[in-house]
Every structure is written in C-alpha cells, then in structure tokens.
Amino acid sequence: MDCRPQSSDGLDSQRRVRRDMSNSLKGTLLTVVAGIAWGLSGTSGQYLMAHGISSLVLTNLRLLIAGGILMVLAYATAKDRMLAFLKDRKSLLSLLIFALIGLFLNQFAYLTAIQETNAGTATVLQYVCPVGILIYSCIKDKVAPTLGEIVSIILAIGGTFLIATHGQLDQLSMTPAGLFWGLFSALTYALYIILPISLIKKWGSSLVIGVGMVIAGLVALPFTGVLQATIPTSLDFLFAFTGIILIGTVFAYTAFLKGASLIGPVKSSLLASIEPISAVFFAFLIMNEQFYPIDFLGMAMILFAVTLISLKDLLLEK
Image (cartoon, helix red, strand yellow):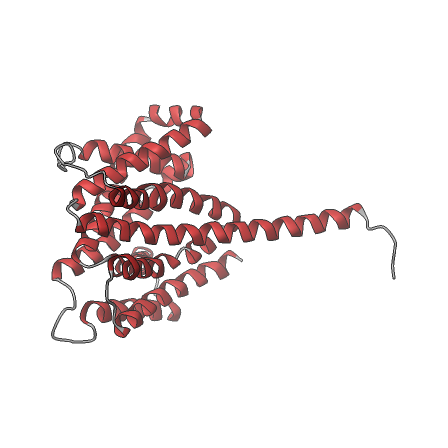
C-alpha cells in the first residue's frame, strides 16, 4: 500500500472534481424542480380560470406581482446596475417592445390556450416553439436543415396533429380557438426568447424579466379589467395564486437561472423539458383532466423533437 502523501496539485484536482460534481448535481436538481414548478403554474392558472378569473386579469396579476418581487430581488442584489438600467432610454424602448409582445402577449396566449384546452395540452403545444425557431433560423440564414432537424420538424408537426385530432383526419379533439391559442403561444414564446437577447447580454436576465414584467403589467392595467375585478381570497384561491405566481413564476425562474449558471443553458433547457410532463400530471391530479394514449404519443413526439434539437446544441457545446 502506498502511504506517501499526495501532492498539493493532486489534492486541488480532487477538490475541483468534487466541486464540479456537486455543482452539476445542484444545477440539475434546481433545473428539474424549476420545470416541475412551471408545470404546476399552468394547472394553477387553469384552476383559477375555471373558477371565474379571466385570462386577461390573471395575466395582469401574474406580471405585476411576480415582476414586482423579481424587481425587489434585483434591487437588493444589484442596486446600482438596476438604477443604471432604468436610466438607459435606448434599453427601455427595447424593453417596452419585449414587455408587450414577448411577456404580456405570450402570457395571455398561453393562459387563453389553457382556458380553451387544459394545462397539459397548452404546455405541450407551446413546446413546438424550438422547432419554430429552427425553421426561422434556416430561412433567415439560408441554410438547409440537417437530417436530424428535418426529423425534429416532422415529429413536432405529427405530434401536434395527433394532439389536435386524436388521429381523426376529419375532426378536432379541441376547439379551433384552443388550437389557435396553443400554437400562437408557441409563436409568442419564440419572440419571448429572441427579442431580449441583446438586453440580457447587457443587463442580465433577472433584471430584464423583472422590470419587463412590471412594465407590461402597468401598461396593461387600464385595459384588462383587473382594477374592477373581484378577486376571491378563500384558501383554495390563495393556494392557486401561490402556485402560479410565487412557485410557478418567481421560484421557478430564480431556480432555473441558478441551475443554468451551474450546468449551462443547453443542458438546463433540456432538463426543463420536464415541464409539459409535469403539467399533464398536475392537470390529471388537480383538475381530473382525461388524456388518451394517442395524446401521450403526440406529446412524446413533440418532446423527442425538442430533445433532438437540444442534443445537437449540447454536442456543439462540447
């Protein structure tokens, strides 16, 4: 047995490996929990809308309250940076466009899709978004898609078809409005990702999202009916509001950002794909929604399409 003491370089290397493993595990757990929390937010929204809260009012409340909390957190951790951001007129103009199109419109489209279908179906339809971005990138850059990308596009379209029709060519399994708002939420989700890229590079995502949510909520305030709305305060409503605002927005977003900082954006996005599975589970558990085997096949096709795209990015990252 070799009893010689290890060199300091060897000990440092072991410590680094242990630290990297610890960070990887922590980042993975935070990202998965964030995805589950996002799934809960959709079902919480479905519960509130099923009991009389309109999607407009709920969108406005979610943006104002969650955005306000994120702004307070940003102020507490980076006061000078936040004040500099608020004084940058050029950034604020870009932020206004992002707030109205990427935040308000996306949240409203997603919640309306839930109202017209259910949390699980709406969340899965929104996950067509990466495929939309892929098609947009291929057209914009005048680059032909790879074989894997073509397979992803076919899977996503096929999966959407199965969810929308249950495999019956002559009928929809949901209302036309539900299908429209589900796919429109995927389009606005793509804008939510694309529009703030330069802002986030300059100011950081937590600050941009927090301030953007508050701006969107304040601009929408006179038009959504939230000032005239009667908001119930019974325990079940408070739990549902906690699910969509505190757990499904503030906590989920903060946990995802922390996880992404530990394991990287590509891996974190891939792990967060647990969100639609979580949404289906909570819709079944809380709202007693019924899903058919063909629905799960369609969902699996869409998730596999997203995974194929993410795995390509993961390999490029390495």
